[in-house]
Figure 1 (cartoon, rainbow, N blue to C red):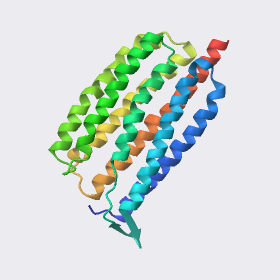
Figure 2 (tube, one colour):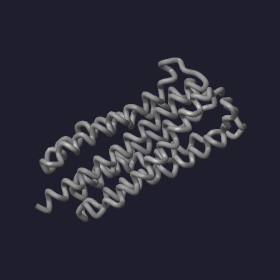
Figure 3 (cartoon, one colour):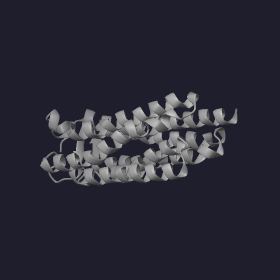
Figure 4 (spheres, rainbow, N blue to C red):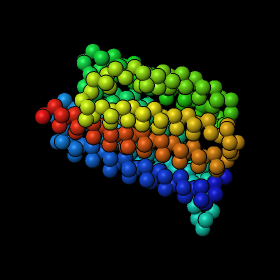
Length: 250
Protein backbone atom coordinates (compact mmCIF):
# COMPACT_ATOMS: atom_id res chain seq x y z
CA UNK A 1 0.00 0.00 0.00
CA UNK A 2 1.36 3.41 -1.00
CA UNK A 3 0.86 6.44 1.22
CA UNK A 4 1.48 10.04 0.31
CA UNK A 5 3.34 12.15 2.84
CA UNK A 6 0.14 14.11 3.52
CA UNK A 7 -1.84 10.94 4.24
CA UNK A 8 0.91 9.65 6.50
CA UNK A 9 1.04 12.90 8.48
CA UNK A 10 -2.74 13.14 8.86
CA UNK A 11 -2.92 9.65 10.33
CA UNK A 12 0.19 10.23 12.49
CA UNK A 13 -1.26 13.44 13.94
CA UNK A 14 -4.71 11.87 14.45
CA UNK A 15 -3.19 9.05 16.53
CA UNK A 16 -1.11 11.54 18.52
CA UNK A 17 -4.15 13.76 19.18
CA UNK A 18 -6.28 10.77 20.18
CA UNK A 19 -3.66 9.53 22.65
CA UNK A 20 -3.36 12.94 24.31
CA UNK A 21 -7.15 13.43 24.42
CA UNK A 22 -7.86 10.12 26.11
CA UNK A 23 -5.09 10.37 28.68
CA UNK A 24 -6.06 13.95 29.58
CA UNK A 25 -9.73 12.93 29.82
CA UNK A 26 -8.83 10.09 32.21
CA UNK A 27 -7.10 12.50 34.58
CA UNK A 28 -10.07 14.88 34.41
CA UNK A 29 -12.68 12.18 35.14
CA UNK A 30 -10.82 10.58 38.04
CA UNK A 31 -9.97 13.91 39.65
CA UNK A 32 -13.66 14.79 39.33
CA UNK A 33 -14.69 11.90 41.60
CA UNK A 34 -14.77 14.29 44.57
CA UNK A 35 -17.53 16.31 42.87
CA UNK A 36 -20.12 13.52 42.73
CA UNK A 37 -21.96 11.57 45.38
CA UNK A 38 -21.03 7.99 46.28
CA UNK A 39 -23.96 6.70 44.23
CA UNK A 40 -22.37 7.87 40.95
CA UNK A 41 -18.68 7.31 41.65
CA UNK A 42 -18.70 3.88 39.98
CA UNK A 43 -20.08 5.38 36.76
CA UNK A 44 -17.34 8.02 36.79
CA UNK A 45 -14.62 5.46 37.56
CA UNK A 46 -15.77 3.43 34.55
CA UNK A 47 -15.84 6.61 32.42
CA UNK A 48 -12.19 7.20 33.28
CA UNK A 49 -11.39 3.54 32.74
CA UNK A 50 -12.83 3.74 29.21
CA UNK A 51 -10.59 6.67 28.28
CA UNK A 52 -7.58 5.11 30.01
CA UNK A 53 -7.96 1.88 28.02
CA UNK A 54 -8.45 3.92 24.85
CA UNK A 55 -5.40 6.07 25.63
CA UNK A 56 -3.25 2.98 26.19
CA UNK A 57 -4.35 1.36 22.95
CA UNK A 58 -3.93 4.58 20.98
CA UNK A 59 -0.36 4.72 22.27
CA UNK A 60 0.14 1.17 20.99
CA UNK A 61 -1.53 2.08 17.67
CA UNK A 62 0.70 5.15 17.39
CA UNK A 63 3.83 3.08 18.05
CA UNK A 64 2.71 0.42 15.55
CA UNK A 65 2.22 3.12 12.90
CA UNK A 66 5.75 4.41 13.51
CA UNK A 67 7.11 0.87 13.17
CA UNK A 68 5.19 0.20 9.94
CA UNK A 69 6.23 3.34 8.02
CA UNK A 70 9.08 5.81 7.84
CA UNK A 71 8.92 9.28 6.32
CA UNK A 72 12.19 10.77 5.11
CA UNK A 73 12.38 13.94 2.99
CA UNK A 74 8.68 13.72 2.18
CA UNK A 75 8.87 10.10 1.02
CA UNK A 76 6.87 7.46 2.91
CA UNK A 77 8.30 3.94 2.92
CA UNK A 78 6.80 0.76 4.35
CA UNK A 79 9.26 -0.94 6.70
CA UNK A 80 7.81 -4.41 6.21
CA UNK A 81 6.43 -4.48 9.75
CA UNK A 82 2.64 -4.84 9.57
CA UNK A 83 0.47 -2.08 11.06
CA UNK A 84 -1.50 -3.79 13.82
CA UNK A 85 -5.21 -2.98 13.44
CA UNK A 86 -6.02 -5.53 16.16
CA UNK A 87 -5.17 -2.95 18.83
CA UNK A 88 -8.24 -0.95 17.84
CA UNK A 89 -10.55 -3.95 18.10
CA UNK A 90 -9.13 -5.03 21.46
CA UNK A 91 -9.80 -1.49 22.65
CA UNK A 92 -13.38 -1.60 21.37
CA UNK A 93 -14.03 -5.03 22.85
CA UNK A 94 -13.19 -3.62 26.27
CA UNK A 95 -14.51 -0.07 26.02
CA UNK A 96 -17.70 -0.31 23.96
CA UNK A 97 -19.61 -2.46 26.49
CA UNK A 98 -18.31 -0.20 29.29
CA UNK A 99 -19.63 2.89 27.48
CA UNK A 100 -23.15 1.51 27.66
CA UNK A 101 -22.72 0.39 31.26
CA UNK A 102 -21.58 3.84 32.40
CA UNK A 103 -24.72 5.38 30.88
CA UNK A 104 -26.90 2.82 32.67
CA UNK A 105 -25.07 3.32 35.98
CA UNK A 106 -25.37 7.10 35.95
CA UNK A 107 -29.14 6.79 35.50
CA UNK A 108 -29.40 5.25 38.96
CA UNK A 109 -31.83 2.47 37.99
CA UNK A 110 -32.85 -0.38 40.27
CA UNK A 111 -30.25 -3.09 40.84
CA UNK A 112 -32.21 -5.65 38.82
CA UNK A 113 -32.77 -3.28 35.90
CA UNK A 114 -29.14 -2.13 35.95
CA UNK A 115 -27.84 -5.70 35.78
CA UNK A 116 -30.35 -6.74 33.10
CA UNK A 117 -29.67 -3.80 30.79
CA UNK A 118 -25.90 -3.98 31.36
CA UNK A 119 -25.76 -7.67 30.45
CA UNK A 120 -27.98 -7.34 27.39
CA UNK A 121 -26.45 -4.15 25.96
CA UNK A 122 -22.88 -5.01 26.97
CA UNK A 123 -23.19 -8.49 25.47
CA UNK A 124 -24.63 -7.11 22.22
CA UNK A 125 -21.81 -4.56 22.04
CA UNK A 126 -19.14 -7.25 22.48
CA UNK A 127 -20.79 -9.41 19.80
CA UNK A 128 -20.87 -6.43 17.42
CA UNK A 129 -17.10 -5.93 17.78
CA UNK A 130 -16.30 -9.64 17.45
CA UNK A 131 -18.33 -9.90 14.24
CA UNK A 132 -16.74 -6.81 12.69
CA UNK A 133 -13.14 -7.92 13.29
CA UNK A 134 -12.79 -10.65 10.62
CA UNK A 135 -13.90 -8.19 7.94
CA UNK A 136 -11.44 -5.54 9.11
CA UNK A 137 -8.46 -7.88 8.89
CA UNK A 138 -9.54 -9.85 5.81
CA UNK A 139 -6.73 -10.58 3.36
CA UNK A 140 -8.31 -8.55 0.60
CA UNK A 141 -8.99 -5.56 2.84
CA UNK A 142 -11.88 -4.11 0.83
CA UNK A 143 -13.74 -7.19 -0.41
CA UNK A 144 -16.83 -9.32 0.10
CA UNK A 145 -15.44 -10.70 3.37
CA UNK A 146 -15.37 -7.21 4.86
CA UNK A 147 -18.89 -6.53 3.59
CA UNK A 148 -20.38 -9.79 4.92
CA UNK A 149 -18.89 -9.55 8.41
CA UNK A 150 -19.71 -5.85 8.54
CA UNK A 151 -23.33 -6.62 7.70
CA UNK A 152 -23.48 -9.28 10.42
CA UNK A 153 -22.09 -6.86 13.00
CA UNK A 154 -24.93 -4.47 12.16
CA UNK A 155 -27.46 -6.89 13.70
CA UNK A 156 -26.37 -6.39 17.35
CA UNK A 157 -25.62 -2.75 16.49
CA UNK A 158 -29.23 -2.12 15.47
CA UNK A 159 -30.46 -3.95 18.57
CA UNK A 160 -28.43 -1.54 20.72
CA UNK A 161 -29.71 1.50 18.84
CA UNK A 162 -33.35 0.40 19.17
CA UNK A 163 -32.89 -0.33 22.88
CA UNK A 164 -31.26 3.04 23.52
CA UNK A 165 -33.88 4.86 21.49
CA UNK A 166 -37.00 3.25 22.89
CA UNK A 167 -36.05 0.88 25.70
CA UNK A 168 -34.63 3.60 27.95
CA UNK A 169 -37.25 6.28 27.25
CA UNK A 170 -39.39 5.44 30.28
CA UNK A 171 -36.34 5.34 32.57
CA UNK A 172 -35.14 8.70 31.27
CA UNK A 173 -38.54 10.28 31.92
CA UNK A 174 -38.14 9.42 35.61
CA UNK A 175 -34.78 11.21 35.95
CA UNK A 176 -34.41 14.52 37.85
CA UNK A 177 -35.43 17.48 35.72
CA UNK A 178 -31.99 19.12 35.82
CA UNK A 179 -30.35 15.95 34.39
CA UNK A 180 -33.10 14.56 32.15
CA UNK A 181 -32.12 16.59 29.10
CA UNK A 182 -28.44 15.71 29.47
CA UNK A 183 -29.19 11.99 29.76
CA UNK A 184 -31.34 12.14 26.64
CA UNK A 185 -28.58 14.05 24.84
CA UNK A 186 -25.97 11.51 25.99
CA UNK A 187 -28.13 8.74 24.55
CA UNK A 188 -28.20 10.59 21.22
CA UNK A 189 -24.42 11.12 21.31
CA UNK A 190 -23.99 7.34 21.64
CA UNK A 191 -26.41 6.62 18.81
CA UNK A 192 -25.06 9.23 16.37
CA UNK A 193 -21.37 8.67 17.10
CA UNK A 194 -21.82 4.91 16.81
CA UNK A 195 -23.48 5.32 13.43
CA UNK A 196 -20.22 6.92 12.30
CA UNK A 197 -18.34 3.64 12.79
CA UNK A 198 -20.26 1.62 10.16
CA UNK A 199 -20.13 4.65 7.85
CA UNK A 200 -16.33 4.53 8.07
CA UNK A 201 -16.30 0.73 7.86
CA UNK A 202 -18.31 0.68 4.62
CA UNK A 203 -16.95 3.98 3.17
CA UNK A 204 -14.42 2.29 0.83
CA UNK A 205 -17.28 0.46 -0.89
CA UNK A 206 -19.39 3.60 -1.30
CA UNK A 207 -16.79 6.08 -2.55
CA UNK A 208 -14.45 3.60 -4.30
CA UNK A 209 -11.32 4.41 -2.32
CA UNK A 210 -8.11 2.47 -2.64
CA UNK A 211 -4.57 2.39 -1.30
CA UNK A 212 -3.49 5.17 1.05
CA UNK A 213 -6.78 7.04 0.73
CA UNK A 214 -8.64 4.03 2.14
CA UNK A 215 -6.30 3.80 5.11
CA UNK A 216 -6.52 7.54 5.79
CA UNK A 217 -10.33 7.61 5.73
CA UNK A 218 -10.63 4.52 7.95
CA UNK A 219 -8.03 5.46 10.56
CA UNK A 220 -8.94 9.15 10.83
CA UNK A 221 -12.66 8.38 10.74
CA UNK A 222 -12.37 5.82 13.53
CA UNK A 223 -10.27 8.24 15.59
CA UNK A 224 -12.88 11.02 15.31
CA UNK A 225 -15.64 8.59 16.25
CA UNK A 226 -13.64 7.31 19.23
CA UNK A 227 -13.02 10.80 20.58
CA UNK A 228 -16.71 11.71 20.39
CA UNK A 229 -17.99 8.35 21.68
CA UNK A 230 -15.55 8.16 24.62
CA UNK A 231 -14.14 11.54 25.62
CA UNK A 232 -17.07 13.80 24.67
CA UNK A 233 -19.59 11.25 25.92
CA UNK A 234 -17.56 10.93 29.09
CA UNK A 235 -17.81 14.67 29.76
CA UNK A 236 -21.58 14.36 29.46
CA UNK A 237 -21.62 11.46 31.93
CA UNK A 238 -19.57 13.60 34.34
CA UNK A 239 -22.00 16.50 34.01
CA UNK A 240 -24.99 14.19 34.57
CA UNK A 241 -23.38 12.75 37.70
CA UNK A 242 -22.65 16.24 39.07
CA UNK A 243 -26.18 17.49 38.40
CA UNK A 244 -27.84 14.43 39.90
CA UNK A 245 -25.56 14.66 42.95
CA UNK A 246 -26.54 18.30 43.43
CA UNK A 247 -30.23 17.51 42.97
CA UNK A 248 -30.22 14.68 45.51
CA UNK A 249 -28.24 16.70 48.05
CA UNK A 250 -30.71 19.62 47.92
